Amino acid sequence: MKVSGAAVRRRWVVVLAGALAAAALTVPSQPPTAAASTTQSGPPAAEHPSAADPRAACRTWQNEWQPPPRVRVYRTRGPAAGTVQSVDFGRYVAVVMAAEWPASMPRETLRAGAVAVKQYAWYYSLYYRGWLAPDGNCFHVMDTSIDQVYWPELRVPHLRHQQAIAATWKLSLRRTIARTGSNRLILTSYRQGLKVACGSDADGLKLFQLSARACGHRGLTAKQILRTYYGSTLELVDVRQHDILADSGWRGDAAVLAGKPGAGRTQWRVYAATASGFRPPASGSLKLDPGQILDAASADVTGDGLSDLVLLVRVKQRQRQLIVLRASGSGYGAARLWARWREDDADDARQLLLADFNGDGLADAGVLRAVRDRRTSYRQAALLVMPALAGGGFAAQHEAWRGGFDPAVNRALTADLNGDGRADLLVSQDRGRNGLRLWVMPSRLLGGTLGTPRLWLERRDWQAAATRLVAIDENRDGRDDIFVVRPRGSTAISVHALRARPSGGFAVTLRWQTPSGRHMPFADVKPAALHVDADGRGDLVIFQRLSSGKTQLFWLRTTNPSLLPGRILLDGTLAWSRSRPY
Image (cartoon, rainbow, N blue to C red; front, side):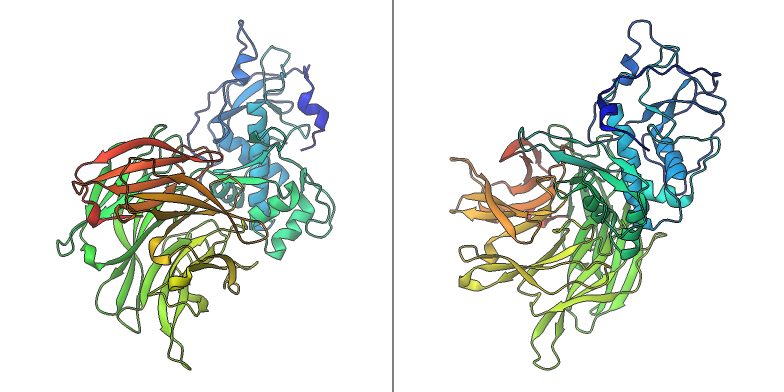
């Protein structure tokens, strides 16, 4: 793909001729899966121009957060030469990948390439250049290296191409213009380049394939490769976080577990997000007593783009299991056993942490447990990681980190704070009257174990017992941030945002306070973070206990620079004291 800057602005009229194709092509709403077929029964139908406005068909897609369902391609070769074809967008990306990105490239280089190929055509679907074919049909891209090589008659995508596309389909690249503050999708140009060291030819504008291959061999993730070539101001946005019910807008859904210990069943409730708030919940249950569930978390452990439910379960005094309920798009499938092990002590396993520790695109299971230091007998924390397997299940556990934080006192969470595509570990250290410290154990280049603890924040005026932390990217820079919910007096709360800095540490900003006259005590709130309105900014959802003991969902929508209250949903049947957001 070779495009000059002038080509973005230049209006071309292409004068080429050829034969028409005949058969129609259906358009799926989802990206191609790793196992998707790359064949079709016939070529896409040739388009016929509209007498009213021949360019109108090229101006229909205006969504900067989701790729278009199809793209209009001018064919210069093959049986359809001289015509405009409306092509399934996922198939278009796969065929271009087969033509321009060798399947032998490292996995992460292919993933970076898949993002660049997808977004190049997406960009010109949004910003139409006014191109018309000789028959009057408009088109977004040509099938040659003027744009991207699309030759479905000869180029067949490899399974590795399909996997790279599926793994990065929900990712988009953006940049904020400092002068205006506007944020927009960028044009992702790329070239073959030279066989030089990783990133040595980066210019901030183009991805160079040969040196990017060296980056993949070095162990860089796709996100790191994209930052290397498109610059440090690049924003990598994943809008589809905590999407359980598979709505067309890729919005995240709020979810809780509920049930009375001893009752023998646990209920899940999922509240579908809409443009203005939440719908009443979809619900179901499983035959598992709430008292057996030590912790619960939600993330995509299967690679289908939906967030699955994973439960850390106590079976007997020292036996532990990881139970997975796969998200189905309308709820969850049957509970499946993915891992089991035996603890040394009855209370060793403390916390379940779901995150992509190795950068392969699947969320792995981390279990934070208590261990005894053999020399001092003091309690320490150890993080055991079980990588998710592509075919289902978790691999054998390995110790990714051990440190001097007692997990009975100090809480942890995972987040990609440095934006490298691998999860980091954050521990909130309770220092009593001396406040709290937030320590970060960063991911390493090749995954596996975590780095040494680094102090990112110390607040003497914050008490660990009176803070609740949730992680999500709230400013669209591709690095996870932290929302901190704290009491403000006895009847209100405040919300601070801790924005992760590229060089380490947090920038602290007060984002919201309970309005005067509103009753919202800290003891009555349970926060969760997800993308509600699919704008790339992580939002905060608060499950609030009412005086009746019931629950309402309170949405705080992220804007710049504040949080704006959204619509409230009352769930009159959910007992707040027995609910556990996940």
